[in-house]
Amino acid sequence: MALETFKQVFGRRAIHNNIQLASLAKLTITDGDYIKTLILRTSANEENNEYKVHLVPYFSSHASSCKNRYTAIHSVSPGTTGGLLGWLGVRETIADSWLNESDNPFTESLDDVAERVLRLPYLKELLAEALPSQEKG
Image 1: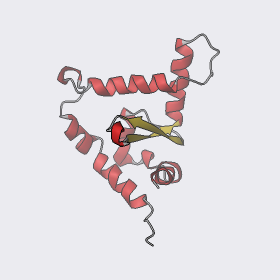
Image 2: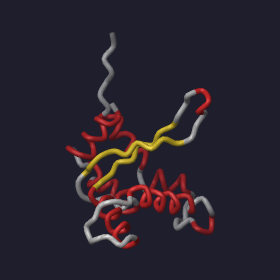
Image 3: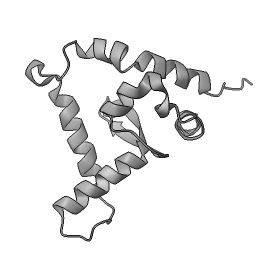
Image 4: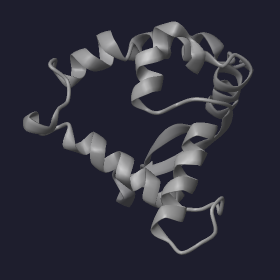
């Protein structure tokens, strides 16, 4: 259901172009068409078969960034695709660095930025509205 919801809101409805989410789109370098959702398994209590996953919407701007980074690092012809994992790692390193107060580019706490600047509660509302209801029975 989550993947179908992402297809609807980022694909057909293109909510990433919503002016109220402009700061989030700018920060995440999100532009263009929605391509797919990356499903990233993160650590959890694996001994009890409990896993956490992150669903990451992936757009044409991200694909372009991956391609540019990959061709800049490796001796391949321009336009060669690749480098998704490396690109993700760089993005994660940047976000992790913000946990250090001296590296945080914002004047507010990250929680305040998430709520008031990036408007993540609003994004959550849009996703919840689009989530298909589960049929009972």
